[in-house]
Image (cartoon, rainbow, N blue to C red; front, side):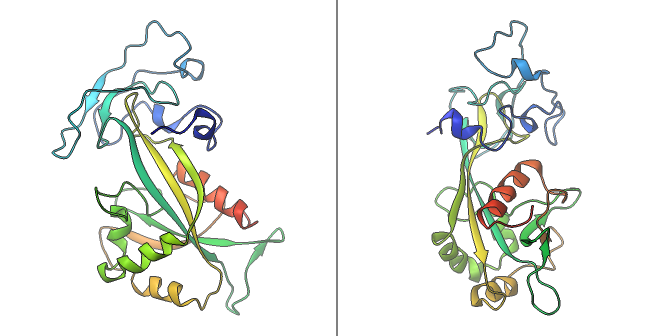
Length: 246
């Protein structure tokens, strides 16, 4: 299922940017350059001849490429490193709490309250990310989220998801996207209003804070923080939801 183009364009200015980065992530693959005015499929681009790349994956769908990226050209055909052709569905939980000073009072900036968000970072990456991604078939939680939570706490987090608030549903500008495979996500807000919330304390106690494969922290929400651009878009939506600083 594809979301309509109007919804798909909500996060950006109408043209995907990350999906046109010349160097494909972690691969020696270079995209065919696509200028802004040539992104829409309906715009003629006679010399457009993008390379084809599909990573070898045991679990990858074996069907031929079907359909075109709803946001336009990316400069690369094939499946890329994604799991399947067409939309690859993801879930991005935006887990927040209020930023507080030593006295427990909520911090403010320009009158607005300040949020903190739970983010993760893998080795060799300069940017932090939301603990989201594509859940495995039959699973509810994304692999990245499972990686930072102790297994016994997974059911508790699944329960939090049931009471979350959807903040975005649609196309996600991502450097792994291609002309024939792309990410569509559902972003949900899980917010802890009270610093003494039992669920918040349970979450903090079940984080793998000493895992060498991933770093975790509560990051103040601000437009200047080192977080992936497409995740910043989701953070801005959550900040707007709570009338918080961004």
